[in-house]
Length: 338
Image 1 (cartoon, rainbow, N blue to C red):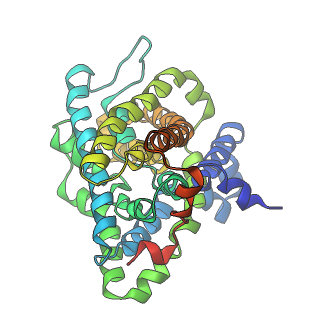
Image 2: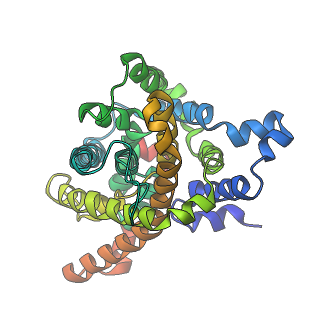
């Protein structure tokens, strides 16, 4: 059976498919982890430790000697995404109560949900889409997107906008695994290669663990706000990212549109932040469901929209499909790290 090939045909499938499987387990057999215990329970409930290892390995993959083109493109997308999420948080904080919206069509929507859905790009989805529709440099631009991984950026944005206050030690704890991995990877190329091999294999594991924190029934009950949030992520972050890609990074806008998604790892951020800030705990279930829905919505729509954008661009500029495809080949680990 060609299971992996089937999964690879789905944009971001390496993360999305295990996430959905985990959500099914949590929905239809919520006590499975405790029933089996031991290692099985570890896989089901091990979101934080698995993400910690993945975060460490992602830090190790970032090479300071990466080509200027890759750094310019990835840096442009990273900074733009963070700035847009920061502005969106400031605006949302003026209109949405700190304890979220209680009734109406947008019931359950909170600043926490908005921030955590907008500040993290689905790096696996981006890489998969740009390997098909972009250049090697554009596909390799996900090398800095790992900076968004984990709750650090969400914490910085919520803290900078005055929505929440985090103790300095919590910031250090959130970024320390990444910094240690980054340091070791740049001190020793062999270590960078060793830990870099773990990045992709860990994705289905933390995807499955994240899915086990999602109840499909909650997604259904908060489906409309979550869908609207997902569409909002694409529009609110996508437009600035397209302009930044064209005007600063020198692209055609496709990379910016491909980065206008919600990362699967963002699903864990409301719960992690809720543990740090007790007043956010009541918001966690609805925020988690909405971020998960936004992840699914963007995972479905972003590849389609990017494909339409690229075809329109090529048609307007007279670029033949076969001609364009000849200049792009899937990137490997050696391509990402110059």
